[in-house]
Structure formats: C-alpha cells, structure tokens
Image (cartoon, rainbow, N blue to C red; front, top):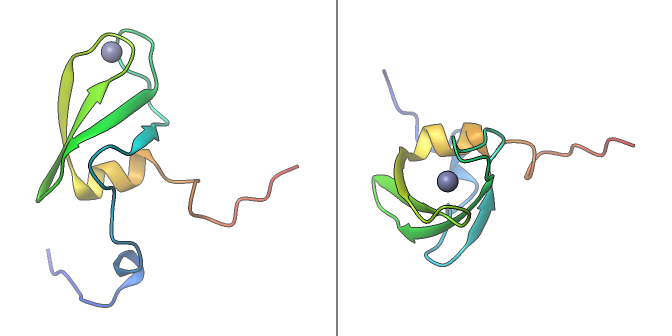
Length: 75
Ligand SMILES: [Zn+2]
C-alpha cells in the first residue's frame, strides 16, 4: 500500500511515552485504559488493568483510538 505523506493521518505526532490512552476495543481482561510504554514503528502499550503489554502498529492504534481527535461532538 502506498503511504502518502501529508495525508489525513499526518496531523498528529502520535502518542508519547507515558500517555494514557483509552481504546475503543477492550482488553480481554476488560480494561480499556493503556499506558504507552514505547513508541516507534509499533506502539507498545501496557494494560493498566492487568499489567500485560501489547504491541500495535501505529495505524491500528489510530483506528482503536479514533473518536478522540475527531470532531465528535455528540450530545
Ligand atoms: Zn488487560
């Protein structure tokens, strides 16, 4: 797949180490809050509920955190 620079995904810098993210999809343990442990091509997250670590690609992480940066002003 082609990666176009300056696309719609090029706005954010991405998550930083220490950031806490709430994913749309919950961990098998039921938790949805994760802390960023390491960034790079892949993002490593630690589940704040059970403490296990998972690795997601940036693209996948963006999907799973979508709705936060969007103008989702739902009432
Ligand atoms: Zn967990």
